Structures are given as structure tokens and as C-alpha cells.
Image (spheres, rainbow, N blue to C red):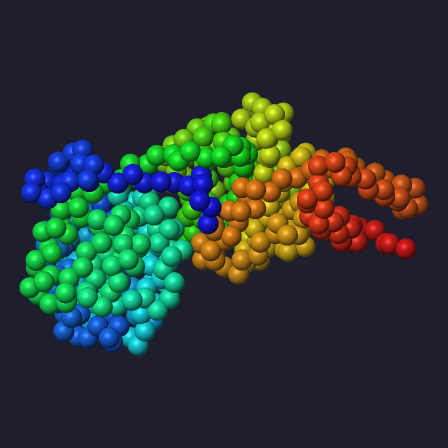
Length: 466
């Protein structure tokens, strides 16, 4: 994952007890809106007695919180080799029901302890709008990991991803855990707690120190300094029945994950968005939002356009005419890289040939994402080259793609291409001469070759080669 241009969260410790060491304390009031996910060790090495003590500890914590749909929301998961979702943030809306479900939690008794995979699972499946997360409303997102042993898998990458995603992670371990691992997973080393053993008395002793930051810790979204790598990125989304209202939140979460890792501001990365089905629709332009919080707030309001047809050709022409222009915020005249990301879940119902040629001539570097019934050959004709086509079996796979696509999206450039035209020759015969300028593409020659191969492959359906 990129180290620069990412969303950082500055933790502000608002400690209420004067006897406790304060770290950057600024406000001494309790914050009564937050989303808290508990992730509990359910491995056989932990044992049922320790598990019961942990369950009682969580019950005591919940009893100290103001639970409600407009207050504090709580979710619970248990893990070992795999993860078992007990309930989500939007499952129960009262303290009574949350406590009752915590008390009903049965010991998983798993044979392994894959903490890294469990953290990744929770990040993907719990901190999303579809399961109740209010991250787009600016509500603090907290994760509490309670574990009794060293992880069997890698925790390094996911620990960084949690921090970069703005999730404030607490850890609570027993003597068989390694302090350095707990501290690495925690958002800040001061949020890593450890007891000798998971028994009622030690857990009761740590409860006051644990509760204070859990109830008062907040995050402020700030932009990290980013290197001078400006680019204009327009997303063009399939808003038809091919996506549907059930899958659209996954598409929206994908975009949010990508945007969270971009250095969004007027001088660096600008983002525009359009949807299409029967007709294209501009959601916002490249110059509509100049800060990441503004952009994410608009994303939270995004709804599926709807429609039965999928006119990709006219949608591409729409973004070329209405998004990649100076009046809409494009810096193409300043030679800032122009990128288009097309996401489609079906085959186009109109002709794409003219639009594909316009893209080649426009100077836009085009990526294509195909999900489900998307036509791979069609997307290869639209994308700048076949390496920029990403195929997903289903919409849930978009979460992984949000990390995979970041490097090409933030580093790739395209060189100039001699204008391509489509003409009609007599007797159905055509001579095609392709020329390209090698001045700026020495280090990307393989990409140009792939583009030419893709172009010729696309022409095979239109011409006979002799």
C-alpha cells in the first residue's frame, strides 16, 4: 500500500480522569456517538474459562455505554482459524438486546488463531455502510481486539491498513501475547492493554483505564502532505439493473476505499464521477470538491441511477465532452494526467467503436473494471491497454481491487498517440498505418506494445487481415 497521500487520523485523547496520564488531551467531554466492533479470540488455546471472563468483561463495557442508533453502536465477532460474525453495528439498537446477545455468545473453540485474516475480515465486512458503519458521517470508528496468544499469520499489512483507514484500534492481551504485536496492531501504543490472565479480577482492574479512551477518543480527518503527483480521475459507473440496489453499496464502498488512499485537493488529485445506464448522468465534476471530507460526504449520498439499457459508448462521449474540460476542472491543458475508470457489469447496448477511438485521441488513460456479465473483449477495446482491464467475479471482490488498482491509478502515465481515424475505403479495402512518438515512452515501451496488440485484436472483428 502507498505510504503517501493517504488519509491520516490524528487521535485526540480526551481523558476525564485527572489522575491518568493525558496524551494531547483537548476536550474533557464524553463523545456519545461512535461505532465499536469487538473482535474476540475464540481459539482452543484460550480455553472456555478465559473466554467466559472476556464475555463478562465485554458485558460490563457495554453496560457503561449509551447504546442507540443515534448514539453508540456495537458489533461483535469471534475468530480462530476463521471469523464468526455474532452481530453487526446495525443489528441491535438497545443496550438490553446487545447485552443479551453478548451473553449468548458460544465459545468457537477453533484450532488456530489467524489474527491478521480476522482483522482484514472485520475491516471489510463490519466497517461498511451496509452493516451499519457511520464512517461517512464522521462518526469515530473503533475496533477492540481481545486476544490471548500470538497470531499465526501476518498482521503487519492489515495493521497499517486499519490506521490508514481511520479505524482506531484497541488491543487487550494476556501474558501469552507479545506486547510489540499488540502495540503494532493498536492505533497508538497507549491503546495496547495487557493483563496477566483473562480472569475476572485482572480484567476488572484494567476496566477503568480501558473505558476512558474507549468513550472519549475521537479522530479528526486531516490531509497528509503528498508528493507532487497531480492527476485528474473520473469514475464512470454502471448504474443499471446489472448492478442493482443490492450491489451498489459495494461499488460505493470500493470508491470510498480508493478515494481514502488518494491525496485529494485542488492542487493534487481531483476526482469526478458520472453514472450511466440508458443515459449518462454527471454526479459531480473534477472541480466540485476540493477536500477529501467534502468528497466523502457526497459519496455517502450516492444512489443507484437505475435503468435497463447500458449505453457505454454514449456514456464515454458524455464524460469526454462534459468532464475532461477546463470548465469542469480538468487540467489537461496543463499536461496533468487524465484518467478514466469505467466500471461495467454487462455488455454495452450501443456501439462503442467511435467512443473508443475518441478515447485514444483524447489523451485520457482509461482503466476498465468488469464485473459479472461484462464483456471482456469490449472492455479491452475501451481500455488504453489490456493490462488496465480488471475482471471481478462478483461485487464483493471489489474490496481487494481497491488496493490492487491504487499503484497503476496513482503512477501510470500515457504518452502521446498519433491521431486514429475511422474512414471508409472503396471496395471494403483499408490500409491502416499506425505511428507513435517514442520521445516520452522509453520506460513504458512494453505498455505501448500491449496497446498496439490490443488495438489490432480489436480490429480483427472489423477487418480481414491478409
